[in-house]
Image (cartoon, rainbow, N blue to C red; front, side):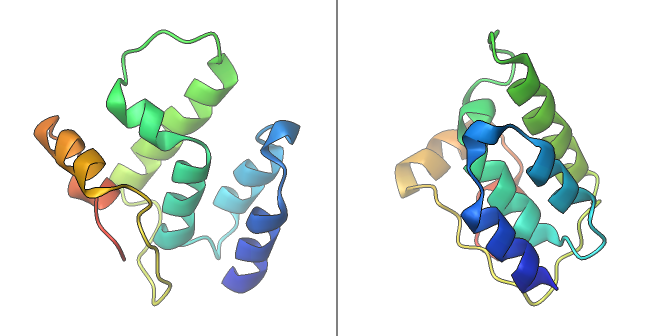
Length: 108
């Protein structure tokens, strides 16, 4: 089932809002790899760089913030699914210096 969720995510147009990503995250087959992929596709990197930043994109901030908290709380389990973190070595280094949790910096 996770492959179907991943397919839906890859075909999704993010200009359509957050309804489908929210549905995918609430699906019982959503694992940690898919949650992290959604996080980064939703520009989670910008959130990690400056979590306190004021933004006019209230819906985006609420979505990414909730997902960040859910990932840290262990809502999504790690399965055999892989996730290749899209960050460069420099981005990872900067985030590590900001003490961002490793789960957002590693590959699964």
